[in-house]
Amino acid sequence: MMSGDNLQRVIDALSDGVYITDGHGVTVTVNKAYERITRIPRSALVGLHMSEVVQRGYISRSVSLEVLKEQGPVTLTQTIGNDHKILVSGTPMFDPQGRIEYIVTTVRDVTELLQAKRAEEQLEQILHVRDHYGAHEANDAVIISRATQRCYDLAKRVAPTAAKVLIQGETGTGKTLLARTIHDYSAVAQGPFIELNCAAMPESLLEAELFGYVPGAFTGAAQKGKTGLLEAANNGTLFLDEIGDLPLSLQAKLLKVIAENRFIPVGGIQFKNTNFRLISATHHNLHELVAQRQFREDLLYRLSVVPLELPPLRERAEEVEALLQHYLSHFNAKYEFDCRWHSDVIARLQRYHWPGNIRELINLTERLVVTAEQSLITTGQLPREMRVDTGFTALGMSLKEQVEGLERELIEQALAMYGTTRQAAAALGIDQSTLVKKQQRWRAQQAVENRNTVEFKDV
Ligand SMILES: Nc1ncnc2c1ncn2[C@@H]1O[C@H](COP(=O)(O)OP(=O)(O)OP(=O)(O)O)[C@@H](O)[C@H]1O
Image (cartoon, rainbow, N blue to C red; front, side, top):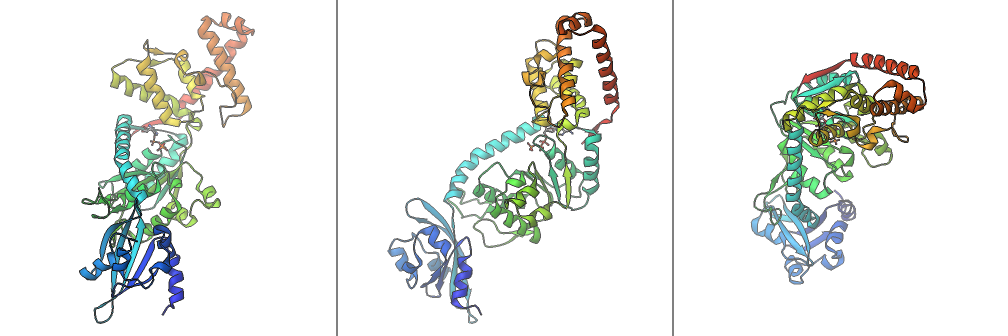
């Protein structure tokens, strides 16, 4: 049996507040977190009956007295000071004769959660817009090249198993699309695909989104409660995007959910069972976050049974033309236009470094289609940073490649301006034959690149 001192040390180690009374409602002890949350010192409470604690104005209502009345667990909210709302759950502990011996109450500060709750409507609106945007971006083809083939092949191979997949890749490289593909090829394809961006909201709201909360837990949401995404994803897939931004406290909780396939909603006292396929994604290097103690190593190993890496678009230059053509048809159909790419635009964009990856390519295509004055889209319509490789922008390319890229850009601009190789060469101060040889070399390179495997696949 644990001594009183040891018990106190154990409850002091908990992050939620704890309040213990005896079977008559007399305060036995509170822990450090309770003192911190309520700013009431333990010494002022120990030995006080709960009715006196209320009378002295320390708290607005006593859950322990309610537990004594109900002879069972009770959850309610209390107000501390003027503005602090705390969520209090009291649980009776019975002796062998069935009499209440102690009441153990856990206390959680929900002020932040309530503020977050107010932000929730706003957020739901944002998520709705995102869904809508996703739908507008939705396409019926995935473009796969040699650079992404291995990744997609492996994804499809592991999709029917329950293995947890961790997708690593820069923003806009197609992590969500890959996760969706795994879901579509999985045993739970008929179930829901639930997506949550862990970087999009504050910690308390994230917890409420994931775990949900019980009816009666909060003002406002009180009557309904909220189903968490952990429950909503049951028999389906839970896709946690930007998992590297999940706060440490929630990492610990998620680890427990993964291990036990069950969880307790915020403010609840009962477990809910859940069973989902977990796919996570991040643009961070999680091993580095582990080294910086910002990510739990045990969680990393749990999540990355199968690690997949999507390369950035600048390393997938052979996909660029297929993507440009695919999204041009998409927006032509959407806006009832008949735009075409000038071959120089395609050549130019194949050498661009695409910091925003495929999402940037899609946005650019849409912008060029809706702003086009004529059906042929030329390099002159490209934003400045895409027209010239200025500075050290073409990351991942050697100096030689960048110099060649710049040379080609300048020659293409001169050709567009003067119309003939003779005049363009004269303007650049080089021989016409040199310019023509360079053009021939680029055409040959282009032909080889075009022969590289680029597939359109139905999703
Ligand atoms: N291989 C592909 N073929 C065609 N379209 C693609 C491909 N990969 C991604 N896309 C499209 O690119 C856009 C961005 O992809 P997605 O949202 O999957 O990227 P992400 O890596 O999840 O981005 P973020 O990290 O910002 O959430 C989407 O519209 C998606 O449909």
